Length: 182
Ligand code: IMP
Image (cartoon, rainbow, N blue to C red; front, side, top):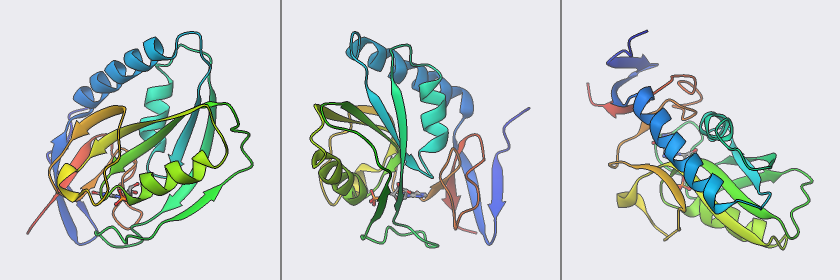
């Protein structure tokens, strides 16, 4: 199936930014790095829902080291296209003490979510915490967060697809699309 150039979601138009083939090959490169870095270790991947689930699944299918998988829920955008700046976290009863954590996120925008996540997860006394994110918008950073495994740096555009949503729609689109003005 060819990738469409445009999508309309509700009242907004979106244009193809990163094709699935390119995403897949970058995810393979990230998985290769993780497989080398975590040789003889047994990391726990914590997928940040809902946005991180598509990237998380594609990444994890390529991981060859023994690992565990957990999820947590984080919310910041609500129904808008601007980061709200406040973050709600819901974490399950995860045993994280002495674990090597890899947080799997869809995008780092202001960095507030990831910063909060790292602080919260640190309080569980893990051995290490690293971050894998499919996307990062460097121009939007309000706080500096190290991304150890980064897919792509993108411009300050609102994007959907690959787990990212506009008002809960568009997550299932198998490529990254950017918002365009009408
Ligand atoms: P931050 O706290 O500003 O870094 O925002 C992180 C969260 O905002 C991500 O996990 C996404 O859920 C959401 N987000 C940031 N940028 C976008 C975007 O362009 N499209 C959809 N969701 C986004």
